[in-house]
Image (cartoon, rainbow, N blue to C red; front, side):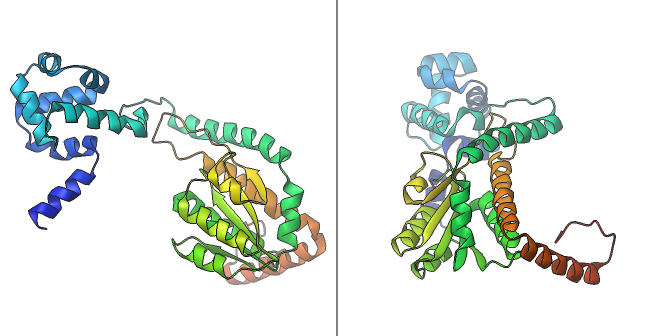
Amino acid sequence: MPPAQEHSLQQDLDLITRITDRFASLREAEKRVATLIFEDIDFVISSNITRIAERAGVSEASVTRFSKAAGCTNVRELKLELAQSLVVGRRFIEEVYEEDSIGAVYEVAKQTLDLNRQLIEAADLEGALDLLDGARQILIFGAGGGSTALAQELQFRLMRFGYAVSAYHQALLPRMAAATLDGGDVVVALSSTGHTPEINDAVRLARRNGANTIGLTATGSPLVDHLDILLPIATRESDFVYHPSSSRYAMLAAIDVLAMGLALRHRSRSRDKLRRLKLALDAHRGGPERQPLGD
């Protein structure tokens, strides 16, 4: 890679990443400044070069050299970029310790489910079921790690009951599918934040073409403006950044509520399709009678 292009790619990285990547190649005095940043970023942001040098135990010239080694023109720019690094959240820079990782996972799941049960009980669930049950076809839009997997989960759940349903999660596919829709079609958008441009644009286009839209997303998010029915999703994100996003629990529970609601509307038909599905699976895989459907 040409040096100019490599330099440009490095500048696209945030300052904390650049310092981490270059730490091994720094001089000993410069490593002391880097270590001070990792240990007390607030002090470095709020202090002048003299105080930074004294605290790190180096000369002011070493602080200046470190700034340039980190890709900044001077100490002032270094402090500015450090402040910008905090915009994404202090929890992604400073370590937070969690004593019981197993207990934390289950406790967050429980708290998230309890909170979202109250939200979905107050939402227009029957209205959403009416739209889905009467749809000519159901399209599910999701993007990112969680919503991509859950879009397919909702597709698999509704497919079992005979609904014409498909999931779209590649960047342009939701937009392409939305352009083909008409009245009688229903889009279900999955977005825990409601800020993903590709999903919001596709849902807006689908609605403009006459499709009804349902969203599992955050109350007050931009996506809500393009929905006929909102099924609100609230997350309980903690400062322990290693914990998986709790929004998955809330969204999966809402998907189960929708699937069960549709199944109960047509009990005889649903039971018959599930029986046929179970027979087809058991004939293929064998095993005990109480295995989950479609594991």
